Image (cartoon, rainbow, N blue to C red; front, side, top):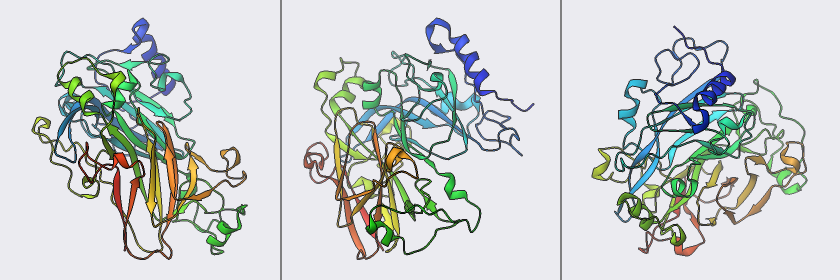
Length: 420
């Protein structure tokens, strides 16, 4: 029989069942409109009451990653269980954590059903940490879906909770576990998340509007061309100014190896002495950032490729590149620069960079050679390669002490931009 979902009633039922403990009851249960076998994939015709449902199933557990200097590190993280049956979710999710967490991409107007299952810590069976998903920067309809344990629920080992999000605001976000946040985020429970605007799906031939930039330099960039269907945009801009040809989600992050080693060997955690020595883009340090082959997984992983995302940026000359930059680091601000290709910042904090964060607000776009992000911040940056000579350029941190892999030159927070 087809599953019928009632997001508000589901949330209420979970809240009542959790009671004073503030945690969800045991049992792996996936909720997804039109899904009839619990694998988070709509079957057949889907659910006519939820035509724009998008479903994701994540596991929360532990695993290992390998740094660019070859050193393995123990980590906590999320794994992608979408397509896995409820009966196999626990076994599949154990030691399957990836860094960063699986990227979540959806469209404005979608209903996102995100099920989180806590599969437990295979390496540290003495830990019974609950986990949550906090959709950072997104205005929740109800606090129960916010993932902050003081105001919502957290998920115990062997349990699941389905978060419901009505996606009405496009932009670059991020997500992370908010239980014991400093520890769990340092250990790797961080992921890319972005929402594409409804402007991408306008009917064929639709003009976008008449908004004019306050800066005449940007008006000249438009080439008097009203974009129409088929183009892609970072935001509902009304004038096509956020149009891009290729986009890359890149998360800035870093690890303190001493903290990770202490977690693995059941030692006191050095919160006061936390010092990140491995700076990364999408979970890898240079030169691994540009490799299409993931770093060799530590033997303890059981063959799981735990660092699947490279950060190599490629485009044809004349194309516009959208960088969806985010920083979920718990210790550092980072500044990144694109050598030889000017940056145009068009959004920050999942808002178009206009007065009031609205399409008709005063234009606040700006050009720069670098962008600085603190923990929990995101920026949307356009790189226009018109007139840029073909070749290899670099996106790197200007915090030069982080252009190493735990002191070994050259590495860290750097990747390549290849213009063909």
